[in-house]
Image (tube, rainbow, N blue to C red):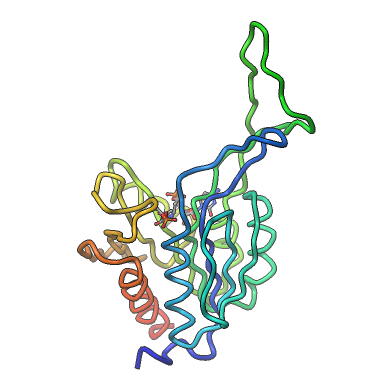
Length: 223
Ligand code: PMT
């Protein structure tokens, strides 16, 4: 019964982009709208879960009262909030498009237009949230990642699954029309830790969320 098959479960979901501050008016970001992550949160809530949605800056709001939205801006803040709830989460789904790098020394004042030289922004590596949680994961917890690829998709996704100690990865490709950033639809492949793979057709993100949760429940049934 899909209306209550997650009842009693705590679910952690990340969604949206992260913003990495350059100065008070500028940031490094990406095109994630949050639609896929919010669809996952609504799907989990409608199936009875208690959801914590750690969200980067997006123009969306959660509808279900079972969703606790924790708004963050940077990858560092997103990691801190995830670590607070991860120990008590049964299922964690990393759907956010986390910036891999952040400016090393964000400026307190607006960087002025240079007369001759263009400014140089030195970057530092951000923490990998999925990999960090992967290291802390207990055997009964399920950790799911996404892979956003442009080429060599399945190989790259499998490599991320292993390196981040995930139980499952949801691959979406920027080569597919109507998939990934901003659209109401997505086209995904699910790759499990035994490397078995299922390809799904283009669907509404709410239906994609349903497929992902069905797959997670199969994993939970085995533990
Ligand atoms: O928000 P929408 O507009 O609906 O678009 C949805 C989406 C395209 C953003 C989503 O479906 C998606 O693919 N999210 C993951 C984007 C991404 O950052 O993929 P990645 O292949 O770079 O990262 C792999 C995994 O590691 C992801 O689970 C990511 O959340 C996680 N990660 C990555 C870097 C980092 N520093 N920390 C992380 O946790």
